[in-house]
Length: 241
Ligand code: BTN
Image (cartoon, rainbow, N blue to C red; front, top):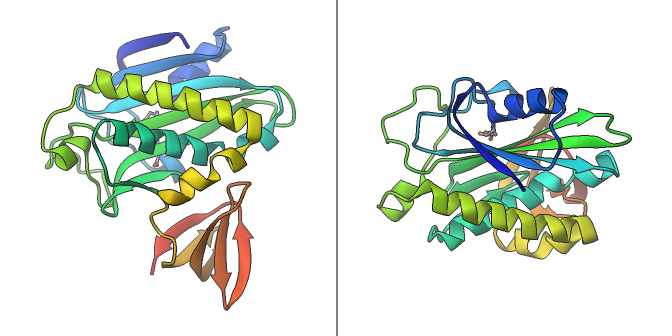
């Protein structure tokens, strides 16, 4: 994958959409030193101070449309966790669908966005933010418990080392995903599952479903025990209760 690095963009995902509109050819990777309008899931802001963290987007062409993309975010989360492990962060775990946590605190977030016709040929933009060396007292916008590689390791990590590891893990996890679907990654994902056995609320729109996490299925849906009955959900936001 060709890689370019910018010193400042609004959002690496937004910049990739502009480059596609201008005729850019996938696949390619964009890294930025900072983002002035880093996007999180559900309209949240992603804290993106200069030169402290990793802000990375990868764009791929997906010929099979949406069916190929559904469980992709779980595979990407696994690749991030594996890259962190390889850099010495031993306790990285996965919160469905794609947050990476250490001791229950968020170290990385992933935002997948689609461009084009979801039923046909489209592009998927995979945006990955990893808290690497962010100062403990830095961003006021973060509204949830977070940690960083530096807090976990007690040292400043060269972001290039993590970026190289991340792209390598992404390539190897995605190649399995394209061959076998998420089924090919499920066991490894489950081994890092942060909330198996925990009581949770799954919020989707105005509905909240209470249950106990059983695991994830081969399509990447979360399996909950709800009043003793197993149910699977492909979307929504989990919180502990
Ligand atoms: C989340 O809310 O957990 C997702 C956060 C995703 C942040 C990354 S940083 C690189 C890419 N560009 C963005 O604007 N967002 C993603």
